[in-house]
Length: 404
Picture 1 (tube, one colour):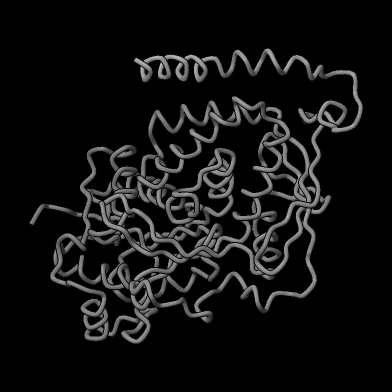
Picture 2: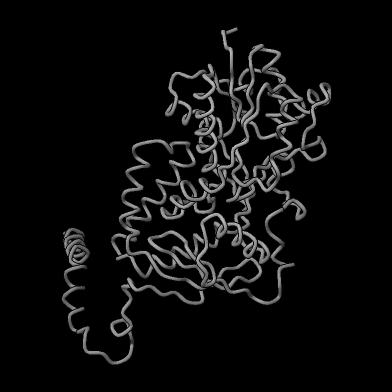
């Protein structure tokens, strides 16, 4: 075995990391530091300290990173319009580099030899964690137990936990995996692996069923400044408070559920079910505002940037020059993206009610079908002739060739 004296573990208290602490002590016989990062899991993390110490940790850190998650990760992705494969709002993808960043901070503070994560060898998270580790502490040893230990399935892990009296949050009867933070809760594995199985309604925690949502629509107005939400229903609100409030508003109206078969980075397809209430509403609202404030070419090019930005986040390439460069473009395009959008939330649907911006490029006098003296409709004839010239030339030449 390598001479590892101290390892810092990305600890969540879930199935994988619950047994990792004990496994590390058995295999590496080193000092184990558990580090739990609060990114809005929706539960109290303080009890994790006692649990970690009782199951193998020599020291425990619990770090509140919720506000940082919103301002430094969620909002930049929101401004970029980053949605992976048109449906996934990157809840887990955005949290992983932040968690890894905090793990490295503790590793440097504790002069650790190694860092450890509980991601499986089949998933995307192993890449997200390890690319961040390499970017921020390139010489650190990375331990990935799923690529080393003898366990082949979550059932094997459960057996190990039961054998060593390690409390775990899942059972063999309910083996699907979930990941929660401020932006979303994801569900995968277990019964969800069969694509013919409809998800169980009792699974959801952030959203009510659209069928059980209120029979009256709820209106919500969001104000943005340079692409960042700053007010909710006319009241200036801090980023964390705004996100938490909007999660509740959208959640009680059944907004934000997605069932997606996605392409994982490692090459396989997998099914993920997500609930992302606040993120879904903010993404919808900002896109409506962009339609007012961005010129056509910038808007269309930003759509290309959005796809690439989502890929970078999904692939774990957050700490890269390309992502930072794309941020520069996004921030420039968002300079005029200020205004308010009013939405109607009703049984899982989002309907735009109104939008306004002092930077709006929409000119009612020009767009009207009524009488106006700005647009000369006769100009359209020359424009169409020039715009369609390649088509006309191609048709003429092809016609001549066919007649020969």
